[in-house]
Image (cartoon, rainbow, N blue to C red):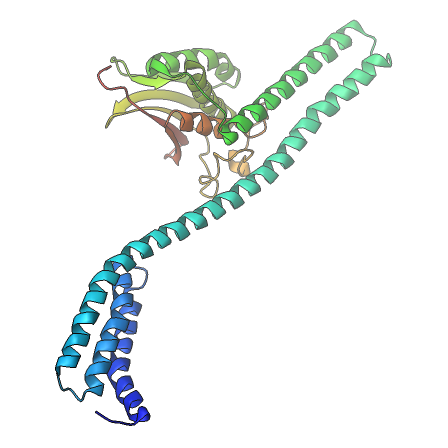
Length: 341
């Protein structure tokens, strides 16, 4: 063993640098693969480097002192490796969670800005019409009885549309704030499908569409709010009516598998653009022209699917959208009540 300091430093470097280099190479090979293995290697590098440094300085002479050092390093390693793995995994989860939360906050802020812009435009349009017709009636510009009645009907329609939009905004605000509380009770999903199909059949007929329902003979029981789930299915059917060309078909189906109840609304429209699929359940998002409402279709604030997704989240359910060979499919899934088939 050399007596001078520089000699000790040199031998220590000779003993430790290969271990550090081998560890760095191993980490590079394992990057983005196994977090646990990476953490173990990070802890082992300094312990093994210290041991090889002592061995090199001792001139490869395995003395009692070197044995004691090896025992101490083995104990330290046995304690620090599990601790490092646990702490490292916890820190990694925290970083991933913080990153996800930041991305969600940015997405929510972007959606809020878009929603404000779109809803502001949609609110101004009927308000401008109501103001113009109201001024015409007040100034006596329109005095024919038939024109007065026509203006009155249009004002009522625009007012109803505004009321629906304000109601949607209020419901979205409650959903986003977590303030929406529903009374859940056993419901046969088939009954809701029949009710929604019957209620929307006149609108489908006016749009020159065929609306039908297909369901199994056995009950499909879920725990839900009758009003909320009816709203969900109504929004899905209304979306299909708005985006299906005249002469098309819309079908509502229901069933159950793997302990889950499901309902699907399928249409023969143009489908959903690939770029729109990840965002169609965001409040205010309407998508590209390929999926924009057709002539005569109701123009809302783009909140129907977002409200449906929010109401389903309260039911511990999910909603998905996919394209088919012809048209789109929107599917909702809910936990099925056991023993109530």
